[in-house]
Image (cartoon, rainbow, N blue to C red; front, side, top):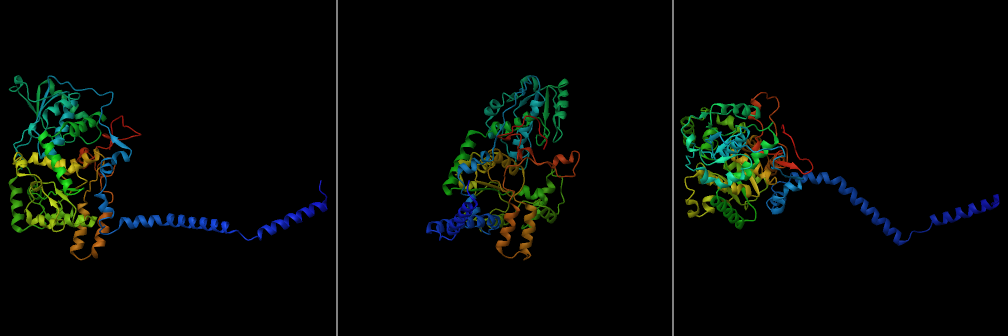
Length: 515
């Protein structure tokens, strides 16, 4: 043991050494090390607290330059564009479940007259495939609409690969090219199926087979509900639309060839569905920017079209409500506000623009690099498609699906169907204009209430931040609607087939879905 004196001496000695150590000058190495650590810590603090500010600034950059964010969206790699779905942990899922059984329907037949334009007919035919399966019937190849505004005389086999359609669905429903001879003259039941109907309705309709072998359906659009259907029925709709209803080889080949030509013009392109056609303007009663003579021509057309129920329409109210297609001028302002430069390549996926170059120049004056199918394809290539609106619309569909960015000026059948298909293919960028919100902005511009282009750009970019086709589940009806009225205002199944036909890699749906 140490004596008290020894302990005291030792303690004093230790204290002296400690004090001497504390007062020793630090070496240059130590000073350098401390300086580096302090500098690194300061950088970390700066980045941590400034990241939110940087994010906000990025969202509101007006009129991006060639190297800015909006320009870069046109310069995404093919892998980024086409592989976006997998990056979200999602994948296509259209295979039937283990409980699924094919419909035989050997002695029951459904004949269909499709109605509307190309995409209204395509979604309607896909619904009829599912309905034939539910009712255990054989589907006869549908007739296409020959009485619509376009007066297209095309047959099913002129637009679609008929043999592929029959073969690809042979595990789902029996499809024949025509009725058996012995059934052509027998009495047919003519049935207008109720719009947006569910399984119970069509299972009850199956009682019709007790009295008839053939049921004729004169309208095919929106016959099947968007939601509350078995998973296998929803996936059958996707197989029918995305796999079975393939266009004819000549149309497919020409469509791909036109896409390649666009790629030669520029690495990336926008497909603009400019729904500024005579029938759309007349039907909606939208006359903004038109002459009195043009407005009167559209009014007369509406009066003389018997199946259009609305005859007297207030154009101003339509526009304020967001029910009018954007005009070429408004589209040009919109694209500029999003940051696209005048050199951007734009393909017009539409029929004849009302007023021709007179109205189209309001877009081309801002974006001169605008291409129409008539200038992209040769006269010889389009010769076979002349006066066949469904076949030329098929070209527009192919080019729109393959585009880097798709923008519709109105939410019609093509806009919704292309958006849904692009979601199915990997949530390719689709910018859906908020027409109601844009009208308010455009009116403020006209009244001098917006100061400078930067204010316009910030407003438009912020308004469309969540309107770019990112993954989300299909929306249900607006709140407050009850009964059958809500069915009309649900997001259409073919506009967003998620979650039934687009699945999370971790969770695969195995039962019916209610949106």
